[in-house]
Length: 451
Image: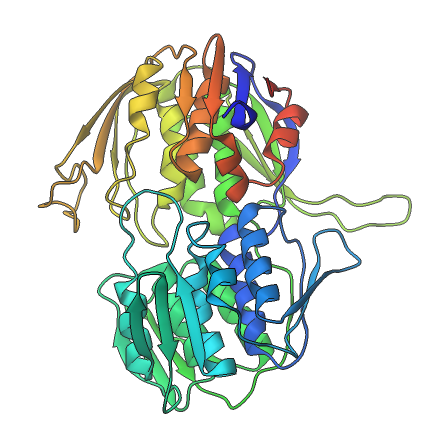
């Protein structure tokens, strides 16, 4: 495990400029969407992260030709020769990502059958795929479960349906979109997720020829079409990564400019960031002019000095406070005066990472009760999904083991903010969602090294 550890010499404020590329939660789904077209697709600003490698591998297994484009971060997908892949080949990817479930609809349309291996992903709760399976069955898919995964067929093709999600799941909404666009007839999805990444996926599908209407009250209507073409698309920037670096700037008392970050998709985070006592400035893109090369816009985040303030917040589906934002921010909240309250309503087991923070000197207590303004679906169940953070607490170095992607970056922030030298094990997991994070740390003046 020594090759998967980062030595972090903490106590130095992060300072400098980094850039975020396309959103992890959109890019991988847009790659899957390329399977639906009968013409090549082109995707820009693709980050070099492990999830992209997994999806690229699965596409190539199914006959999609994937090539690097002329621009850095550009991928071209040619789906002209889609074919079946062997169970053994697909199973190589079992446990490495949760993306394979989204191949179901496209493969059923293109081949009439699909195989999905056991799913991996971060261990932050069961994240059952029941919603996915129910939706696929309503479209007309036949699902046969086997020890190695699931085999799906569509004996009479896929047909539009009416479906209401019990909870506005992002993954299940993506499943319905990717299946409904070529299904015969009209599909109506109620209680759909409407995250910016979902809207951007709809933009991708619309470019391919899909007819999708986003109504009020989380209703999406998809009119099936007989064929789809390709797309050319530049995705929205990764708002999770941008917020993670913002939290790192706040926790370490530093100043970080995140090029590519966009204000519109981060409004809820920015409000909380300012309420805590952080400062930020939105910088607009300046196009090139004669004698000037131009400049990419972004958001500059910094700790303005003085004490940070405790806050109470609840995670929620968009436009609420994103669940992926709370873990990095909680590290900064350990430095705020007073009692901060975090009520996690999206994933039932997302507060386990606080044990490591307590080990480093934080004072965080987790509870089974809903410590928010409204009861949530975990309130009467045996899940510790609320946290009270007492601060400010002086953090000290420790040996840390990363349990999942977002918690991993939070552990990294804590190590950077702490006094002394920490060893963070399992850091390669961070590569699933953060491109070149070690190079970016170096650019921000962090003192980190591989042993």
